[in-house]
Amino acid sequence: MLHDAVVNLGPWSWWILGVVLLCAELAAPGVFLIWIGAAAIVIGVLSLALWDAAFWTWHVQLLLFAVLSGAFALAGRRFYSNRNQATDEPNLNRRGESLVGRTATLHEPIAEGRGRIRLDDTWWSVMGPDLPAGTQVKVVAASGRDLTVEAA
Image (tube, rainbow, N blue to C red; front, side):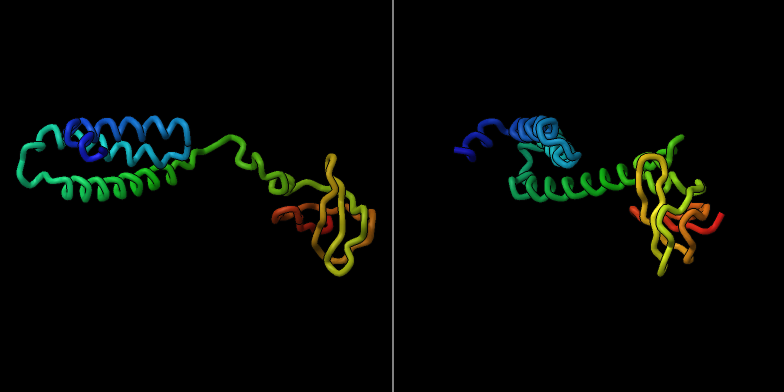
């Protein structure tokens, strides 16, 4: 049945597959199916020109489709991975890093390298040299939820 549909549709079967994959990209976003759909469209374009050629068998078409799908997916991945755009808020969603340079008062003393401070509305675990509670400290680094401080 599928074979008959492909034979009856001829080169348009690749176009239909490409459009279905592009529409599937809308339903399942992730920027992956678009590359496979683009490869199917390219095979459809080639099939319109080469459908009656002896060498343009379904084996060649499938092989070329697989190669183009992989090439397009790799090119797309490279394209999207190089899109690091400059922003005016580089620490957005990096709350700990946005605190570097701020000062606070130690709420709990730093003993054996660990203590706590309160900045804004949040309690933070801090690491640094042993200091008594009430000491003014400056945040010098952030790693996850841990801040590194030194006496201010």
